[in-house]
Length: 273
Image (cartoon, rainbow, N blue to C red):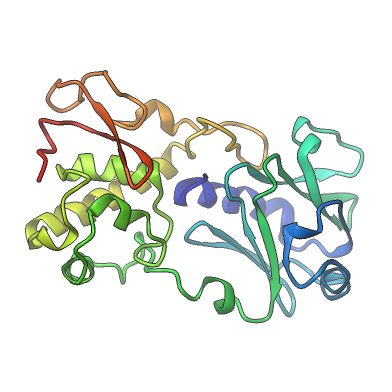
């Protein structure tokens, strides 16, 4: 599933081709992609509205319109891109939602697994209000992280995947951050002292910024809106590198399962609890 860096790159890739475009129609062959409202009302409400800004919150794309917000969650295989009316792309094979735009353009949502969802709402908080803090925001300090960790006894890896605890972090960047911070994925969250929380705070931000710098990880379905791949996978420290040497100490990276998710770590740099 695309995580914060990948969704950030989608938002950045859509700003130029989408901002200022007016919606003139809607098509869908999979009504469930529209979480709310239902298709007929969705089409009536969005018709004529202009895209004013494209932003991100956690793993959600927020498209500000004249009077409402179009919210998109890509889930596992979703791709969002702008194409000319007559343009035919490989991703169109799984297109299930399309907005017709003025100027002969279309905003297309391709999703092979059909798990992605879109919302049209006057109250974005009704969709994203339960998300935790943004890990790259100024308000997300190491002391704030320590306070949130101290109140929770869960293992740190599944806690980082909880979007109500921290928005945008998924399996890839949780593994990368924990390795940077030298913290085992099964450490109880409330066992981390302030120094370790500070290290984790720094590691989370570094891992996510590296993901953005390298334009996301194209290891499965993720592609940028222009169809090109990200290159973050070429710079992973541990994720997907089971059996390969740890870049810090040379020990073989191990893979286990934590909370039903494949988890990569260095047994020497990240000693077990």
